Image (cartoon, rainbow, N blue to C red; front, top):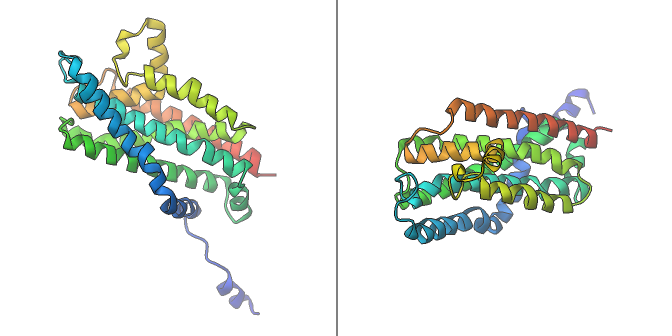
Length: 266
């Protein structure tokens, strides 16, 4: 076989190798998306109805003069994005290293560590975006969105998703047992969801817990989402929120790339 024939027979590589990894996860998701409908869409919707309409019916004055149902929507949107990002970044990443070893197969192909990492992260952000947009459409039908600034919410939830998914990728890549993933939910995700301003104002917490809430990326996204849905000013500067979430995303990417390289590059 001549050199030209060998070149023609060789499969063409995608111009963006990470896109091939993203396509791989997307093909798998086409067969399993029904299983995630409840956790990523129906459950948050039922939570909105339960807390917003159920509990909200007993809160006569609302929160800051705003109906509780409208007030809670921004927090639940950010919380939904967080939980989808964490769920897609824990056991799937751990299993790709420990159980089914997909990452090792991908790295054996002409793919670099940033391609493997970036393609999977892109799929996680796709899941965050689609779940959040579906949730947002539902609350729009209930009249809980008061401002056209809500159109910026997809960008906010994607940034939040990257801010929590990237460091979680790094964490899932280095732990040696899936018990550590359950501990992450128990000691980080659940407390963050309860005390980062999703269900009640952070200002009602003691000062020490209040500052712990401010440290979490979720509070910054909650403040942005609530300001966008209600059409009010954020408690902190918008640029400050975005920079803080961006710092989490960048730091998480660097940690994840280092952890992936240690596992995949022999």
